[in-house]
Image 1 (tube, rainbow, N blue to C red):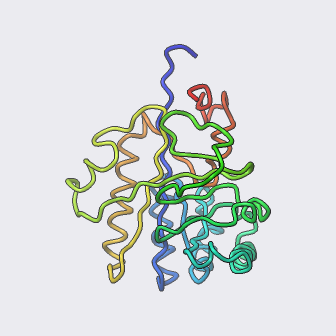
Image 2: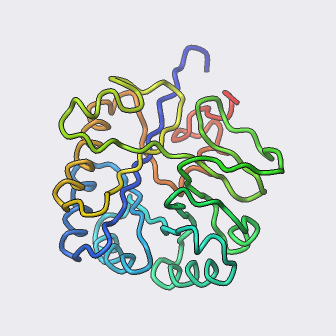
Image 3: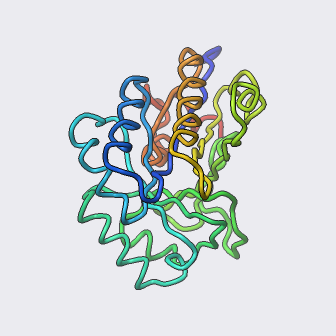
Length: 239
């Protein structure tokens, strides 16, 4: 494997706007299909149904993560209920995105419920040490066996290419690294503005298709353990 450069791995997570229409979500799903780039759609309980139909009809390379806030993460009963509700719509739901700087509670429950990937905007302080090492350049940790936590990078709201180029990598992504791009909306933001950010993220990835590989949030555990597979390259050999 000497001399082989591992590609950067990019995961695009796009929040489904609260109150979005089914036609809007279907249109956004088509953007990912046209770009041939998987998107992880982050949706609350009310929006999961809107994602289900377009994904079942064609966006098979994309995935879904359940959005949970601080209140859900702090209550075992509410968290279990939310996951079970999501599973009624997506039977293979195994990823969660914590919203609003939420502190993560009940990691054992997440593992018990089959959640394998948890995306946060920052790691909270824990008393336990990291159970499994992640490769250099992969913002991941495993506090409990069976669950990988990963931090995301927020895409700025500035419009135009000037707002994108300084974001995260500048003009290139560092080889062998992982970046989770959070395409989130802001309160009162128009659907058009939110969509424009998604289009910029997709365009950024497409222009660098020779040096990056794309994945869903749910793919991260497999990528971390699949050293030597074609899709994962030799990711763990850098650890």
